[in-house]
Picture (cartoon, rainbow, N blue to C red):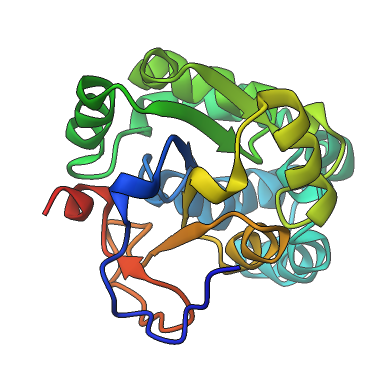
Length: 226
């Protein structure tokens, strides 16, 4: 298994890659949309429904969100619709025009296609979110296949996800790279045996880049083109 003691080394050894596994939110699509949705819009609508102030709504929602992070429920629009009494999928469609690529992401995807590399979108997004985002951006057209963790019943943070993904795709983990902004996902993939994993440090274009030393890192996927 690859050691990442020097996380500042060249992010990807492309000559050793046959399969490119790409996350969606925060890697290709701007996480600014999701942060707006969950930190502003949902609390606003929840406050109106509960007849409480926005601040009171946040105080109720923050611990409920935190308790589900890293689980499949966190990514499930059906779950949050039931829990909050809101049409989460409908809200996403309502503001879907805000969904956009991160700077340079589409150019990077075009490059992968031109190089003939096998590209697979691997996301925790629920089918409702995936539908809104792919319709808005045309993202799915760049990939051989789109895989949602909801198909497997476990999130990407779970080791079993990677085992089931290998079975479905029939790819060699030793010849694969995963690019993702979620450190828990990168850890799970690395521990499973994905040879190369790369962290995205600026998933939200409206926020500064994070400092990540645990894995090779890039501010944005376009940086991989040198």
